[in-house]
Amino acid sequence: MFKFAIQNMENQDPAVVDAIKASGESTLEKATAKAKMKMDQFFNISLNVAVTGNTGSGKSSFVNALRGLKDDDVGAAPTGVTETTMEPVMYEHPEMPNVKIWDLPGIGSPNFKAKKYLKDVKFDTYDFFIILTSVRFMENDIMLAKEIRKQKKGFYFVRSKIDNDISSEKKKKGFDEQKVLSIIREDCQKNLKELGDPKVFLISSHDLEEYDFESLQNILEDELPEHKKYALLQSWPVCSAASLEKKISMFKRMIWAASLASAGVAVVPLPGLSAACDLGIVVLFVSRCYYAFGLDERSLTRLSEKVSKPHLKDLPKSKLVTAIREKAQTRLQVSAAVATIATVEYFLSLLPGLGSAAAAGISFATTQYLLREGLNDLANTAREIRKAAGLASVH
Image 1: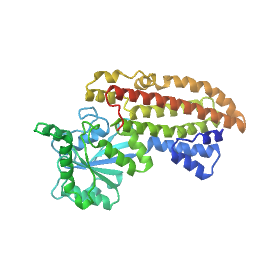
Image 2: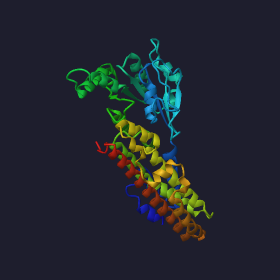
Image 3: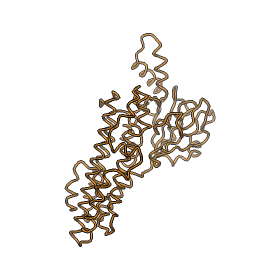
Image 4: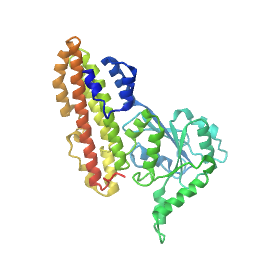
């Protein structure tokens, strides 16, 4: 039965497959231990994002956008024209507490010292830095970037409030949006030449579907370690049809590891244990899909407001979406399927040798089926909603 699992590795996460094959470990226990480690990393790995910049650059609004919140939502970072952040303030992602966005103090002081600043804000806490401005990047931004580079961490320049610029320029004759964006980008990059002409991302915190947010996300995916990339893809908002498909593909690649992790539980001869653990994996997995795909009520309300289609938040007809939304996961139909097979697993687990392997095969196949069906249901629902919103094209 372990061979059955190995033969079904196609299109699964290559890191899990390679680790198991390369190790030469062919026992079920050792293979499932690796799969469990992978799933624990997938669900719980930390990601700490530092957001800094001058007073009034839109740091707090950007922090809120990354967390899928509007500025007036409960739990949102406070915004204002004066500096509201005097020391690092940590904001957990609403659905993924292992992902933390840090709103750092402004860097506009004339006596700014980059090295001291990074020490004061506890530099080692963060995986990377986002340096914001709402006008152009100044000397303090450059000094900070140089010190971050010297200490071997990543930094990314974001020009915020682009929607304000576009709104203002639209009033002028001969308005050309692409020309305006090009001028803003070139103006920002002029002061960054000594850093090797880094890319500047033009972003509106109030509309992540527009401008360069997706480009920023793509760069981060390329440059972050794989396990950190998982946290990023799960937590950051859906900003396009293409970004939704990336999330779906990521979860599909993890089904094999989740199924194998559940298989090891079946060899323990305790009635109901495997069923409970299988269901736990299923519920956690599909719940993460639900939030990652933007199917929660807050995300759908925000999308409805963006496209002026109030009915969108009431569109999902999926029983799975409804069950998760009502926080009734234990009443999902899948629980009955897992409970039914638990008795078979228990008796097969009591049999020596082949019996344990057979039980593991049932657990693997059952969980794989439940995860695949749950993922497909949520993915198709998310696609249908974007289509109804007029945002279905992949670009």
